[in-house]
Amino acid sequence: MKAAFLHYMDSSGVLLRENHYPIIGKEAQEYIKHTNDSAFTLTWQPRSADAAKSGDLAYSFGTYTLHTKDTTIKGTYVSIWKKQNDESWKFVLDAGNSGVGK
Image 1: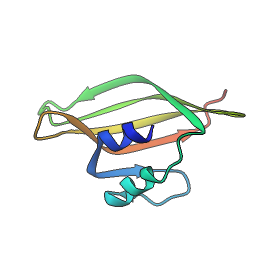
Image 2: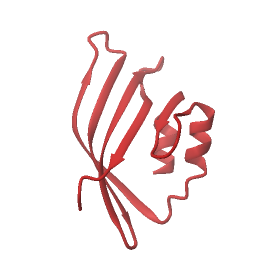
Image 3: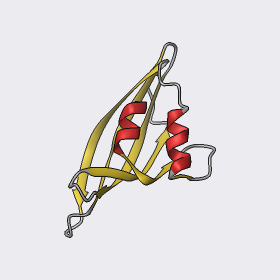
Image 4: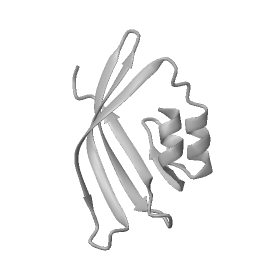
């Protein structure tokens, strides 16, 4: 998870996480770098995505499942994406919330 988030996060990316003020830019990158992702598996299932007519912004949303040794947490997420100068896409905002059952 950590490698994917760091690869796809824009340098000004924002993370909206439970019990945190928005985590922005370098702070967001540091937050992800210090996340220990060896004790869980995160999977997600996109439900929909769409892009602006201009082709430079897009969003995706869906559901996720986080598995630990003892727990399974399901929730929803939304990501807002920005096209980069090299034509790749990076997210500029990522938010999720748990609580959609087991």
